[in-house]
Image (cartoon, rainbow, N blue to C red; front, side, top):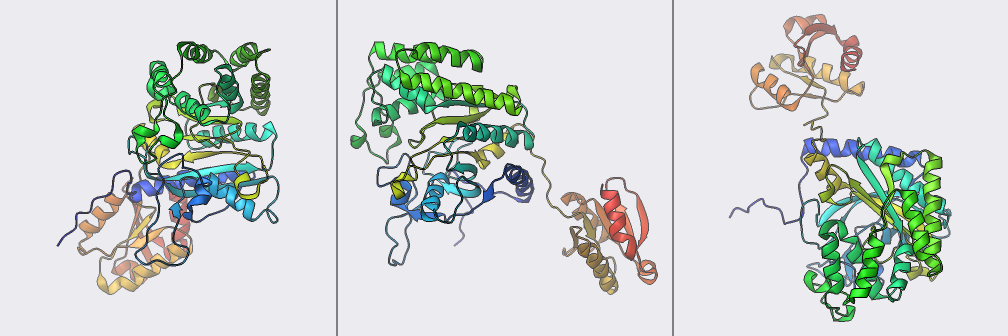
Length: 463
């Protein structure tokens, strides 16, 4: 019986051409994070479900684990759906050994039981950077700086890091008579977060849609979890007026100050916080064309407590945010009872890669091999392998041809198909002279090189 080699929906394979480019991008991001002073950690893919959910219904459909053989402690395990909650667990578990503030980066796969769609996967990689232990707005400002730097480092220029603060939204909740921190407020924020996808009319429709209490929703039914709020026309009008605030970052902050002045102390503080962040970004010299205050940014996860950030590609806005995050000062509390301030951002690597593919930015190479050593005469295999040894000891990616068709034409076709720049031939005369023939496949130029000079010659031509 043969099994069809098909994948489940929402996951994908990465072949060498894609992996090589992705690893190159990740290496650039990793180096940039380290320039900002972040250090790496890794956490298990499997966590106790109560760790991930805090003992409450999760904000999304999570993957629970099952094993054919039960062992003690196997019940109640799930795959992590992000890297932020595991970070909070690590901070709580290792509080005596970690510095404060703790600057960490982490690159791992996560799993969510979401409906697959363009740029959205059920298994995907995240690349996070977080500052834990600082309540300073300087930390949030630096995260935005890091987000801009990350995007520019990997080659993007046309993008915006859009940011706001949950204080703005909580102040708005106060204005529409919704208790900040309540499930109704969380639903309001989720709906506002959908504005880019469903538009203003869609937001208004959801606000007016009948409300269903959180405890009455089926967590396994995506349609049931999307409750409306049952807002009155007056409440919807207030939200719409709030969403009408536009302009430059400075103008938006000023309009917020005017909106909340005398009506919400929290709103006044929110406007002040955004002004401080804007001044910090300007002071750091972060390119102004790459960031903007956007009060529609809400972020869907309930644990955000302060500034929130999203990154939109101006040439592909429909794919959604490719790097996002925010402040989450209360997440560690579920483990220790202690409120530990924290802020950070996460790159959705697979969504980012999908965007780069659509924009034609993926430079695909099938291999890192720079040199193919051919075998024209089986009796000279030892001489060919000696050339291979010289190249590898010099750190030059190289391989010897091992295909079934040993014809020289087939060996050259292999090199050209793989995009290998150099090919080495060793004939009888080269073997006797201790030399090789080195051919550049891009220029078709060929020269005889001695083994002691082989590595140096390849390196000079490769530059």
